[in-house]
Image (cartoon, rainbow, N blue to C red):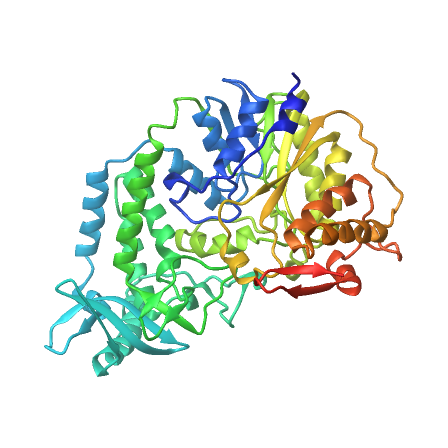
Length: 526
């Protein structure tokens, strides 16, 4: 039985991320079992597997588990940090916790006192959470003898807010530093222009002091683990967590792939947040230790436009997740962490569509063409490459498919795989979101024709949409795009009647009705 036949029969039910994939936030993670299934199908033990757009490292990690030699390349230094920390041997848990607690003990009492709330009995307790409405603190929550207490703010709380600003200035004058990096416009929201504006003065001061002390730790492995844990906790004590004024609670985690600070937001305790992440770090490391092998892996912090560190025709299989055009601004979002670590980031080299940085279709296309030529060079003859991709804009599909064909790749299979867990953005935009990814598999050849004809896709869209509406009564955006995109690509029908790249959303809106049914499901109808 051929590998292509096996691929066509392959059915994958996505699994949720295990603890070792939850050590640190990152975007666009694909189901680990999807990656493992593809690697297992196309390779054998000892083979070399490459991910030229490594991200958080699913391909390198799963390759290691399967005794394959993993190569991961990413221009984003934060991505490289995450993968290295995930795969490194387990650190001394006792020393890790002891070092962290010694850092907390070193924080001056006047800073620690800022994160306390005074009870009616005059005793101050560690603040668990506060909820703000814009720039006004409204309610606080703390625990007295393990009993939860929630109340509206009083004069003591307001005084601590004022003192936080004064002490922040005092310690900055003494040399304390915090990130003041300007937020890239593409991800900027709510008028927040600088990274430091995403934190309250109180949390900014405490966090700045903690990372200052972490950087003094002499044990390199312990220090790197603490820096990793620190950055993983940053979103939780930022202003980006929506809050409930009455319950004095906040949602967990970074909700959308933008720097959005909702008007009503939480101010969680910095020290408690980092302690919680430390426990999750230990849990994740304990989870992965029995799974990783002694097989070598290689992580390179450079662009896949030039993979000089990988030999010609040395790679047995490639599985990757290239940037989805304008979907996620990885480098801009990673600045939330890299700014605290003072990492040097090559923003100019990023492959993305971002008109605010003059990175438009031409730049995106040129860089992807360079990348896939390099990918073709390092892959062995007659071997395979798979990538995941989704985007509702056909201009990005045409760019990436043309780049593959131009490099010398031939499409042999297309699959749709659902996501195991919806993202925060999908939860907010549930009306019209795609809930999975296409997995395109290619074979390395040397010449693949690129059609120069501009085939009209309008009739094709109408035909497929009507067929699906007849089948389902109304058809969701997810199901519709799952059926439309492969057909448009296979028939090179990217264009409308004016010979412009077709805007599927606009065309559908002009020809069909998009509405909600009695069960609350959105879909296209006649």
